[in-house]
Figure 1 (cartoon, rainbow, N blue to C red):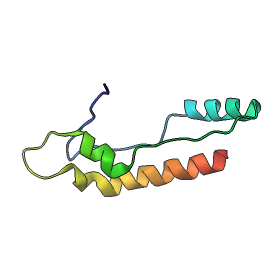
Figure 2: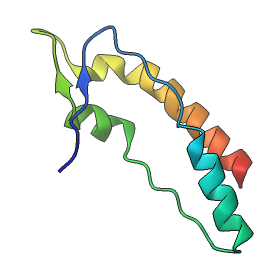
Figure 3: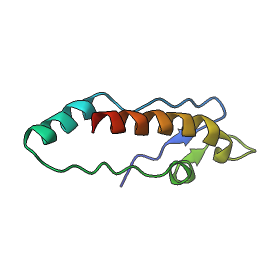
Figure 4: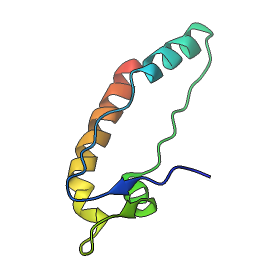
Length: 79
């Protein structure tokens, strides 16, 4: 089971929680390889619930892509 995100046209997206930084640092400290797995943005929107009577969660894709880009940039900088 998972919590199903709910969206409407006013939805905003931000980058990942900073706690992941510490987890990545800890894995590196133990010389462990690390693979972060993210669900894709279209899948994320498709799995969510659209609260509007018309339209589609895909309307939010441009804003979500900005957050994904920032997240991937941050993950790359963390190594």
